[in-house]
Image (tube, rainbow, N blue to C red):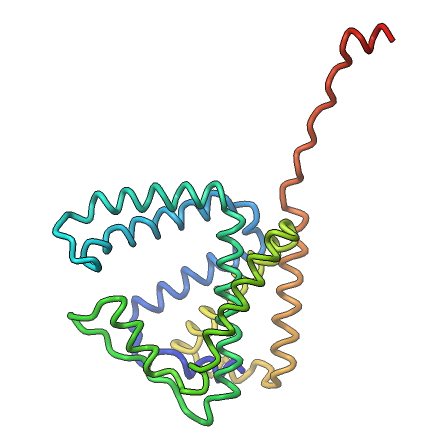
Length: 245
């Protein structure tokens, strides 16, 4: 399974990509074991950056003859407030994205029919939307047929679980998010520097899946202990009438 994952890596990512991969892997390790402690401020920060990025690009997408500074500030405020107030919903969205990604990887292993994946080149005229469109064009036809349904089911299930079991979903979400970042980017960094090390890892798929499940459970168990306990309101003092009774 690890070597199948390596086939999705770009051929020449460059030294900058290697440094970013190592940094993100370290961040993922922290989130895997203690992400629930930073849940609300981290989600707020991410949504602020996301809102600012979308707002900055919005005039170009809509062909508005205005500066993107104002829309960037507005997007940062709107999404930042939603990230602070509705941070559990955003964690559910992130979990849905992680489940969609792992589901897409599983579909790719079973439906690629020996076909590889080639990342399109990024040119000076490329935009984020055009590049995503080029990536989608390279997805195998069978995978492209089922992937939207898989992503929809994963997203709805993750958000519903966040509503029904908030604490359980919170700790399992951060464990899954952090573990995915840590394992995925660590594997990529090793493949770019010392690919022969991966040959020493267990090659059986079931062993790798069992190891991932065990690490995910350990992270969730630790974060369950670290999760803040719900506040218990202090009992109200008895009124004068109750005292007389």
